[in-house]
Image 1 (cartoon, rainbow, N blue to C red):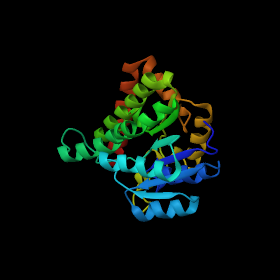
Image 2: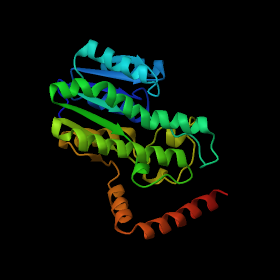
Image 3: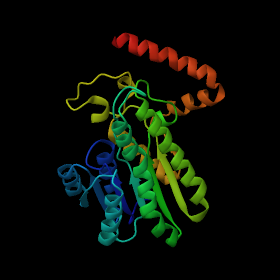
Image 4: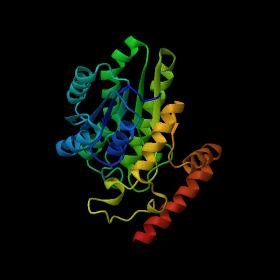
Length: 260
């Protein structure tokens, strides 16, 4: 998909990867960009930069996703590209994490993609074309050490994107799944920008991810991997799952023993 004269919606568009996507998309002369974010001021700021429409909303609430699609369509016409990009990290840990924490990250990292597809697919299927870009993570192809809710929900996000592509690909619906590794955003760096992570040495700037997305959309690739090494790791996982698990256990021990 080329973005010229297209209507684009980006959730989580006020910060990080989402803001970089909005700014990069604006360079492609779309007909309209809708910047959706739970942080109203951030959405307004980015929308002002790109000449778009700001919509404050929570992607974890289905009614608000429905409202977002309606506002975007009313403002610019049928949506060509819906970028379901918003996501949260949640908490480190595993089964001991409280149910409400698990549920909140599930709602934002998984159900938000379901709500978006449910809201926007009817108009796309009626026209016989449309594009869904779902932001997951390399954690959805590999895993996330130390944080079970993030790893599990990102696996689910990849699985849902796969299902959408298989089910609707022959009906004119294109699907891409964005799976970056470390990106220099608040999620990786923390609110004050000083948080340490083993992902920092290879972390990309959000603008680099946005460039990879525009290239991936133009080629209509399902997996958009701003870190090309992720494809190699994913192949190793598939080639010898037991060996991959042993390697990940070793890496997990090295990281958390160092932090201790």
